[in-house]
Length: 204
Length: 335
Image (cartoon, rainbow over all chains, first blue to last red; front, side, top):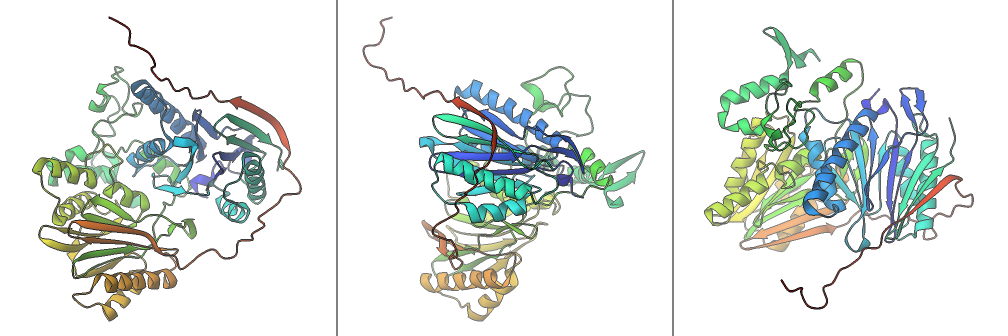
């Protein structure tokens, strides 16, 4: 069993028209036993940048705390929030620093940049950035997610349609993965509001 | 797996620790490449000069001033591997990368597929990296390594592109390709092949056009045409058949595109589009997605429509503050 399959996870982010959506499953398990059904994988860095981490849960929490620390320092020095591109470079540098003993998690970063242009990217566990214009996926259900998103994604979707698409892609993919699921957690962010929704999914 | 644990004296250490020691002997000046001894957790490292919380361990502080790699999670990861959990696989770039020298300069080419095991992770990634205004480098191997070794995003000054820039400021001259080559091979050799980046470096400087290949262990070759990556054999067969000296720009681009295409269609690790970069004296042209021989033609124009909506348990809406622009109107206050 791979280290990433120890806790199980599924994370996906999609780009819409001046908005983005980021979604994850809610299961926390220890191999095949489920420990919690409300695990928080998506974290807010600031109002316009979100990061979701998949992989080993302990590294997910540690890395999140380190990133919030670095962002707060940045806010104190620069007196403004970090842009999503800068934040992605920061995460990449922190992960690459541990190249030979890496954090065992794969982040998905999503944010609204200048002029409300949405930005998404994902990385492997040592910080190789992968920018995409449509969607990015991560976690044990990533193969199903690739397939579902390729089929369901359309460019320039509005917030409501984007929510529907990302939810359907997430729920159908985690249904095919034993290690993730137990509902979904979706954030849809537009320039004026953040909508956080908990989805009802199969609890098996 | 026993290879990783070397019984040397009283304590067992991982091989990385001994590489660190060995390289200290060979390259005393390269000490700055590594963070301080990772096994001495009791002393605050020099990197915590900004946040010296007394006896806070090095592992707790997150702002290493010296840069370089930190090995503090190695022990824990080794323990997990011993317990039977497989190590993670990294994003590789599979790849076909090529370069050739033509009449007026150098042409570099690359495919655009990034793989994670057998899955295509990125269908359109960039493999031709900027090193200097007149020098570009294509990278194959582990994606994070090729990005880091050629990049400037790390504050660590060891990364070659930033080192070249500092060198340009110091000397007041344009960088030479041989300088980039020496910096890259020094960096890769000092990590003994563990930084898995195979590169094709090309550029035009005051001494003319140059093309080099660099292997992950640090060896280099200087060639008139070169290919690297999993698709290198497919591309090299095209070059060996059709390359001649004194090619014009268009002939060169056509040949490079053909070599990359042969890699894309015949090698499973390479795919998607062709990127080309043409460097001549004083001028460069980066043709991103020069050719797209694999377009997506099966997309349905209607798209998906979902008849059954997803069920939502809870919704929480957080309105975001409007961004306020403050413009100064009126006179300044008098002192």
